[in-house]
Length: 118
Image (cartoon, rainbow, N blue to C red; front, top):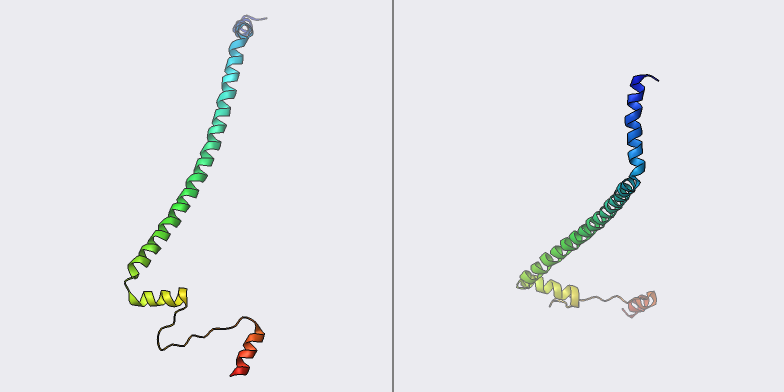
């Protein structure tokens, strides 16, 4: 063997000899790497879960704000007589004076009976 290859082999042998004698350091580094990798995976999973929760809560907030605005408009318009009349007609079926309320019966036989009476 020539002199150059002996010099290259000696540091390599020395490094391998050091690794063999300090195997516990290698095992410790492998364990730290594995635990670090697992913690990063948990962190990513938690981050995704929290992003989904933020999205869900943002949607709920938007819906609540829309409902709040709608209710505020209803409260503000309760002073308007035309609005009150519309709500009475729509929700309670009240008919203003001068108008005729028409009620339809549900079954076709009842409708035929209604026309025969006229």
